[in-house]
Length: 318
Image (cartoon, rainbow, N blue to C red; front, side, top):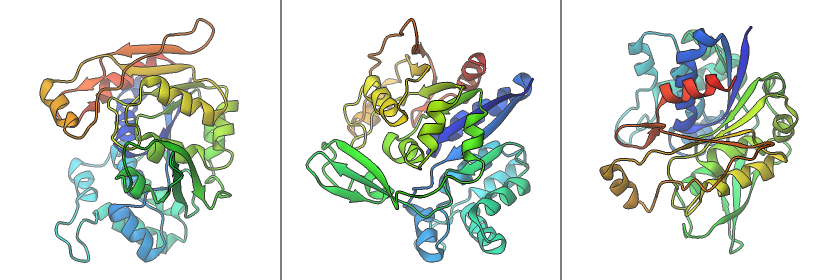
């Protein structure tokens, strides 16, 4: 019987999860849908969005390429980033092609579907919304920061905690298929990824948090490996979980945390950026939330979840 998994997020973390699910989906007969944030405003995505008014493609492109069954050379081509600071400088080939498809097809969703077809993606990749939205944050001193990139690369004192995030405009609609995919999922996976700029923006789209809360599928959060100076400075696992549950309006069923210590050179590199391993300060609850602590690390820099370990662990929850 086909089991349905929905991942919600963005950035490198979501692509690691998808890579893991792709490895086990044939064994477990999985149907996979990736719901991806639409709030990216930096780099190539932000420039194309500003110039052509298109969707920010970066996170979606990572998911498409990660799920692609196309030859490796083709996947590498779509992720190729032009060097330099000229008109093409720092743009990826895939972002440019998605922009062209958007103009040819007339919508971001059709552009994504066409790209999936071109790259032999059998899974579903959906932007959480087709609307053009700006992520905003209010800090504990009352300062308002506008734009995902300005939050992700803090244009403020990184020691100040974020107290609230919202989308402008707030009344955007979920993209077609998003709510249905969540409602029919057997497993809903949030994270890993930047909490305020990759995960929560999905839940700020009207109807999405409620759909997750009301869904019958098991709700799983994969906790980040490291804190991030700015967004999650000094966060423990409980800080991630309580904030997510506050936005969802319900408890999560499983929290997956890494229990292995990164290598000394990895810790030193992150320490120089004032980032540290996330402390696991949660305990399983007999009637609800279960905490799974295990070695999830892949060797080397940057600190990443191992896709193979994630895939097997998530498949075991179905």
